[in-house]
Amino acid sequence: MKYMGSKNRIAKHILPIMLAEAEKNNITTWVEPFVGGGNMIDKVPESYTRIGYDLNPHTIAAMLGIRDFVEQLPNSVSEEEYRSLKGTDSHPINSWVRYGGSFGGKFDNGYARSKDSKGNDRNHVNEARRNALKQSPKIQSVEFICKSYKDVKVENALIYCDPPYQGTSGYKTGAFLHSEFFQWCRDMKSKGNIVFVSEYNAPSDFEVVWQGEIKTNFSSQRKEATHNATEKLFKV
Image 1 (cartoon, rainbow, N blue to C red):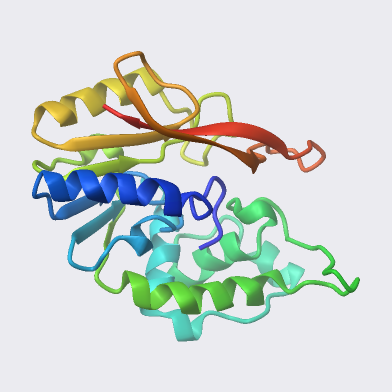
Image 2 (image 1 turned 180 degrees about the vertical axis):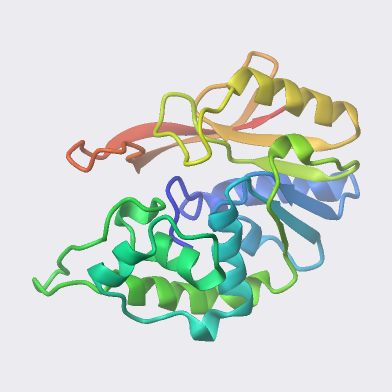
């Protein structure tokens, strides 16, 4: 699913690193406390037990929409229909529309509109539906759970975290305390888990195992230009 901060573009670089570590330690459970649009977990082999958590109920509902109701997802939504969904409860189809029909894949970020290379209006919802049709078969065995990362209690698992980055656009779930999160990562490592974190920066006891420059825009303001940033994968 199109999602702000998606790791879809760099998954080919960082996923093999994490899978190799899991194989080396005979780990067969993959856990994502910030599953987002599922653009990493959908590439993890089905031989793993895969569990995706997210605190935002609309995120989990949208992923369930892709997994379980993909044929019912609409191929077009008017701006009026899109606006009518704001403020409604989480729902597999409606929540998906509020991502797929939204500017930049950010939840409730305004009705997406732009032109294609020929100057024609793009149908962002239909593009999102085509992506959902491709993703749905890849997540059939993924368990999606609406909980905070703090409620994740696992042992002997590989935990991949893609939290809200420090200094970037906030999430709908509110302020994120990075110091608490980093300590949680340490605590999870002490329980026999392997913990990886995607971020720009992390404490000194987090080892950089991969980095690469990407073009990104986490700004909540459309007028601010896309910029280059050095994406990093840390191992606790």
